[in-house]
Structure formats: structure tokens, C-alpha cells
Image (cartoon, rainbow, N blue to C red):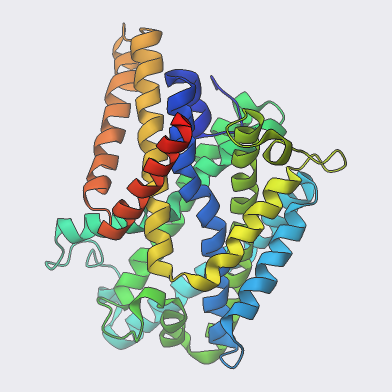
Length: 363
């Protein structure tokens, strides 16, 4: 509400801690925003390869990325309406998936094995591997912060954007929790899978065979397409506002099309980056995105502490102390746990990227 700008964590850090800190946060966050569309291109290759194993994955990646880039070059209303339609089918099929899991488990083992807390507490769960997994999978929860990058094109952004963030975070979290619960119920470990890193097609096949696998993969592909549209749009707008602030060359990155009001050159730039998905594997790309996301999350919590506790001194009531000190400190601690369990390669590459940003800032 205080800074309804399109730059997300970059804007908060810049307005709270100064231009230099904002630039470094924006630079590090680019790992998150720019690579997230690439992840969707990579996933499209994985899913389509399962449906058409005889066709090289790079052809799918190129076609998928070109289509996403073309739609993003149009106006934001088309993008938003198309995204809303595309999300419906996968959510419906997730409900079908949960029904099939319940039916399969009850048929094999009885209903007593359905209504159990085993997916959460099974005697074999250890906290450190869970935290390590969370450090990798936190990239799944990045959509809610991308909402803020559309502030510049949203009516009454001070009211609409905060609501959208909470609705996105809570609904996404609920869906992930429920689906993970039933997947864990059906597959207590990953011994069934030939490739645990890319197990989605195998999971669907074991639950209900080839036909449902094909239908579900099409739906997940549609969902991946919707995610790619949104992440592509948010990455382009972060680059655009950093271009407008002259962190990057303004003539290129700060340009907006007079016809569509879209940051055309930034959209094309992100599309070019997404094409490089043909050279990456899923593990590496996800880890690098997590580094950028953790920088963004950390900076937002620090910005809240500085802006409201130190600058505005809003710590005079129990509610203000909870909102402006306790909550951001808890946020920092939870993100700190993720930092300590981040993949070593991601940390090395991420720090190298941050060092490059520092050198650029000094220049």
C-alpha cells in the first residue's frame, strides 16, 4: 500500500534503504524473475517429451517460448483473461487426481489408510531433509510476489494488489498442501520412479494409466503455459522499471509500446533468455531461482523493519509491535533457515551474480 510500484522487492528496498541497496536487490532478484519463465519453458519440454518421445525437446521449448512471448507482446487485458481461463482446467483435474488417489488407496488397503496423518507424521520424517527440500521448492511459491509487478497497470492498486497477493498465496498454498498430501499418501517414498527429479508424468501414470496421464499432462502443460505468461510479464516489468530508473539503458529497457503499453523490448529480451532452457537441467535452474527469491524475501522483511519500526517509529501498541517487529523478524528467521540449506552450487553461482551486480553498481 505504501509503494504501489511495479518493481516488487526492488521498489521496496529502493524507497526504504536507498537507490544503491535497491539496485543490488533488484539485480539479485533478476535471477528469480528472469529464470522463472525459463523454468516453464524447460517444464514444457519435459511434459511434451512424455507425450511425444520421438520429437526432440528443444523444438517444444522453442515453440512454447515463441508463443508465450507473442501473447505477452499484446495488451495486459488479453494476458489476464487468457490466464484466468487456462488455470481452471488443471485445478479441476487436480480434484480428479485426488479422487483417484483416494479410490486407489481405499481399494488396495482400505479406507483406514486414507484417513490418516501418515503423510505428515509417519515416524520416518526428519526435520533437516524437510528444510532442505523447502529451500529447493520455495520457487513454487514465487507467484504471489510477481503480482506486485503489475501495480502500474492495475486500477486502485493500493487496495487491489494487497488483496491479490493474499488470495494468491493462500489459494496456491492450499492447493500445494492438499496435492502433496495425497501424493505422499499414494507414494510414501520415491523408489517407484525412474527419474525422481521429473516424476510428475510417472506419478500420474501409476495412479490411473496412460489415458489419464495424457489428459493430465495436457492440463499441466496448459497450467505451465499460464504460469509462463504471468512470469514472463512480471520479469519484463521488473526490467522495465529498472530501465526507467536508468539502472539499465533506458532507451531499450525503459521503452513501452505506444499501441499496447507493454514493455515490448523487455518482453523480447526475456523471451530470448527463456530460449536458453535447452542448455539447462531442472535442478540447476530451480536452485538459481531460489537464490534470487530468498534475496527478495529477505529484503522485503528488512524493508518492513526499517520503514515502520525505525523511520516511522510505529511501535507504540501491541498490534504495531506484532506487525512491524515480530512478523518481519519471524519472516527473516524462516528465510534464514532456507539460506543455510540452499544448494551449494546455487549459493556459489548466486554470490558470483551478486558480486557482478556490485561491480556494475561501482561502475
